[in-house]
Image (cartoon, rainbow, N blue to C red; front, side):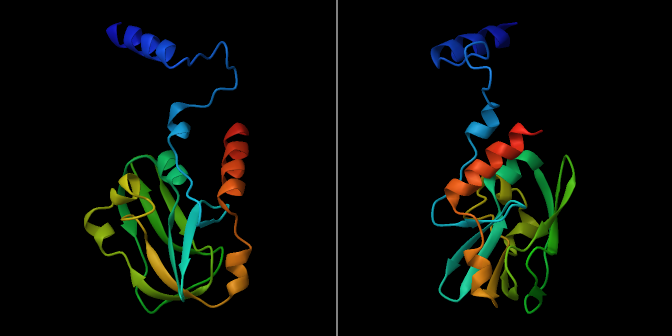
Length: 162
């Protein structure tokens, strides 16, 4: 009861109300971040392209929907990835999900910290929670990915349809 009263008073103070805003989205979506300067795939992976290397991870939106990540399965350095094809998996308390590569190329580095601390994907999806680094083999694949505004719109539309 006390929690409900606190939530109600907090919502009033923040001027949040499901009555005055019938299309109000869940609070968890409000806190998902989409960063400018990154590219995004419709399978919810991000790419940061710097020089000849593209860093890949899953988005804040994706980790939010997955819940607490408890295990990450990543490929070996020296292997290759193909656009829109799985390269690993993320296991959360809710489910196991494949991770698709947004670009094709050679794997030049793997985030070994994730084997010991998979929760980095939840706490720092764009910095410490990156998964692999790839030397892209086709620059046009990067150009075909969404920017921040397009990805935000994509997520809003996807969430509205569920």
